[in-house]
Image (cartoon, rainbow, N blue to C red; front, side):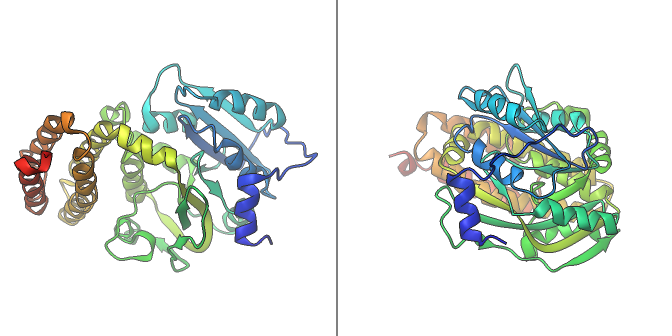
Length: 350
């Protein structure tokens, strides 16, 4: 087994594959789905981490969301070398939610794994998944993440979970138990192996209005919420399955698209409250989600407004949109009103 530092270095800087043939798989067990937007710098590293896996019975569905860089050119070259790659191209930008769903409906695997093109999966994780799924029929397998910066500097921050299976009704409440910490929301799908049929059911259960929205943030949370509601079994493993690498590009892109991100948050909140309005316990969870996520993004809003003065009216209008909607809990409205006062303060724009 390669040491962590060496594996990350190899994926980042050198070729892992020599004289190997990757043939097209007609009945893949796992479908790896990757939405892409302008990630040409990291695509080869991401592909190396997949090609290095000892388990080969997979398909790699790469959906380009109308990139303007060399992403498609690089993938077309890789596709010639690895027949397991399926390259799809959106004729116009559709956002990550729609793009991922395109990949899901194109997939043939029994299980789905979502991998972003600027991240990598851990050594031999697919072989581990194969062993687990042969022994047990879990709907979801949730594993651990390593989180690090774009230079792949160590040590990474790792959040451990205990290894155990969960069944209804406890699964839904573990949305609250993100990364081994109570009351830390789990809104990722990149930290889970998901049964394809469960994912399809989750999509059918989500109102078509939301699935057609251009979302660049909280789209995973939208689907993850429904996956937990519908799942009958979930297995936590302490295994590290994914390296989440925060790149310079993702930071820049996040700032540039913040208006769209804010709208995505609003759509997510509205969906959650509509999905839980008939269940008091679930509604309390939804209220916590609102407060938790908006706390996180309020700091981002303030930071951006310090640099983007011309857009301050948009942020004020959006905050008012939150405040004057009935589904926002009082605790969150208090946070928003405080934020609004900060923005309106004259000294803020000096």
